[in-house]
Image 1: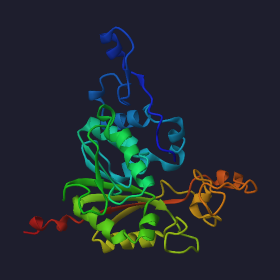
Image 2: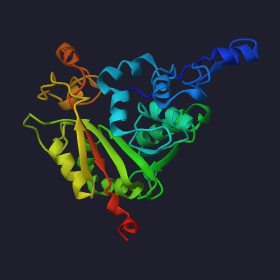
Image 3: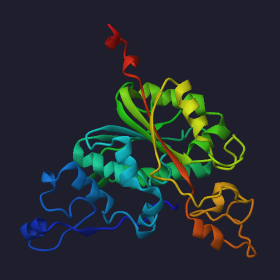
Image 4: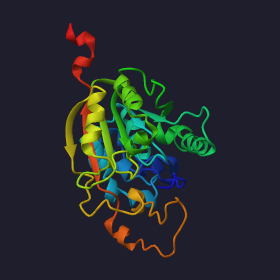
Amino acid sequence: MKNNIYILAFLAAFTLNACSGGEKDTDDPAAQNVHMETLDDAALFDAVISGKHRSDEERARDEYRHPKETLEFFGLEPSMVVVEAWPGGGWYSQILAPYLKHGGGKLYAAGFSPVGANERVLKSLDTYEKLYINKPDLYGDVEMTVLGDGAIAPAGTADLIVTFRNIHNWQERGSIDEFFADFYRALKPGGVLGIVEHRADGAELPEDGSTGYVYSRDVIAMAEKAGFDFDSASEINANPKDTKDHPFGVWTLPPGLRQSEIRGVENPDFDTSKYIAIGESDRMTLKFRKPIAADGALLE
């Protein structure tokens, strides 16, 4: 997915136009709704997902990512304190941030540390800051933190932590225990950890994340080792057409459509049509909870 550089202005609500005597541009995805303060949570969610601040390219991925159904499964509410771990270009931040902004919630974007980072990482952090931190009228008070430093959000304050297709990266980095400890520390007792990841189940693949696919049993074991309780799984993001035996791992599929061992190097003899027909990967969608008893005060 390309970083979102297509933030579009769109028309304000009829009532705003009437008051101003003409059309008024706004980035606010909920402003298309008259009297948005009267909307219930579901209507507000729909307004954000359909907001024109999302490009056509990003909307096209809803078919495979199912953002509404996925976030509803995790229990997202607009008043929550939410952490998105490794948000990347912010595909999900575009939905989470304005939804939380209008509901009185808060989004922490827990990403890379800039200390000692290479140029690519620094550019990614700078882009995220320009798109989401510097646009409070659209995205609210998004706060960037560092995953791995123990303070992705104030301890015991997060209602929900979500991460999308990142476990395989953390396996290769050897950061699983460290990052899951951060999640556990930040969540309230009873808080939810929601994970979406490329699913290796049903295939014979390495268990080190090198293909981009991870076994559900391994993710459950990682979370339970960190102290989480497994709550439930959903097939929201399943894709039975994904055979998982692709020459360049999960990156052979859309949106990457890798054609060689080296990312970005095209092979004119490589036919991508088969992989386009498959679509994006088969994915697990797992929900965990921090035990209520994790709060010592509740045991007294």
